[in-house]
Image (spheres, rainbow, N blue to C red):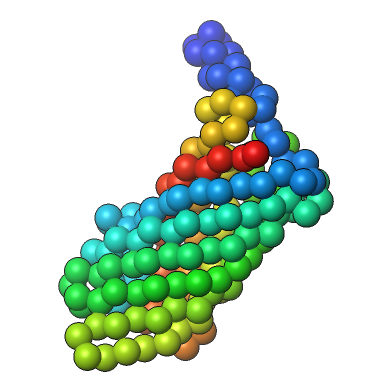
Length: 163
């Protein structure tokens, strides 16, 4: 048992040895959620993809731009989202807190809606090498317009590149 725990600790140390959260670094990523990884009262099955780009303005502080697309099968709706946010890397091992705000335009059949969201998230950047990461995150996407029915809790999986 001790050998297995020691091996796990060594593997995690190796993956995070290349942490690059210094001021001046840039970041691009693609992530997806849905496919049964999120839940809201409105959406039963949905598919969400996001593209993110960021820049570390100071050590451990990143400013982000976000562009997203979501498809909800049950409602036959398409949603485009644009927003911005930030991340704070708690410690140099990749654990981060994020907060973003976004505007979303949704079209379902002939109905068009506009919504604003605030999304806190908690995630981890697992470094696979010097620049590439796998980034799982838990998020809560709070709807400003329809808090009770349009807010979502979910899991997002992403791939990032720090340069």
